[in-house]
Length: 112
Length: 114
Image (cartoon, each protein chain N blue to C red):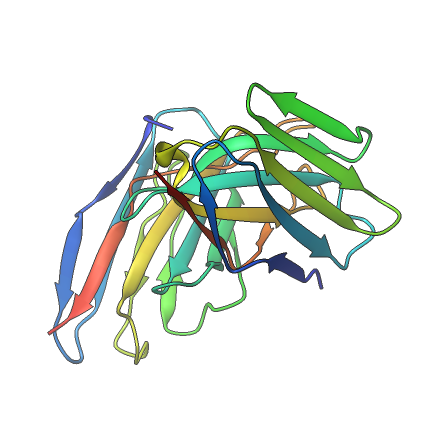
């Protein structure tokens, strides 16, 4: 089955700096890769996703890149702000009708 | 994701007791999911259902049971066979269909053992 690894497990950056979180997956049939942000005690919220027919997707300060050959995808947050502090989870799925396999999460702290 | 509700917010279980967690959605989504999250950990799939009256086991189904009698509802029962039930339980739903893979989460139920 699918296995998703995520690094780093914790990340501290200064406000205004960039943050990068990387995930690798094992199932070459996976074709949908969402990223979720979870604040303490709250539900995970989708922040961006990418499908395997696209190499990069951007939404304001957030971007995701996908390398299908190497089976890894990354989340990039630019100009970080204290409200970006949260746990971020990546996931992989074979798409429609298939389940998500989540990475273990990255705790991001943005220091003022 | 405001259309997915879970209740109660906190639930206490006594030794040997079965408890049921509620999950309701008014998004007309076909698929529903239950995840367990332990402190500092990722999400692990307990059960999922892609259609009414049908559901499948996830990675950690032992000690849990579900039903899907209505499209809107997917309750999870934590049975006395689940020896370590303390966790944060998240329900999710997705619309299904090509290009509709995204899962939307409810606010969660925190289960504690007395």
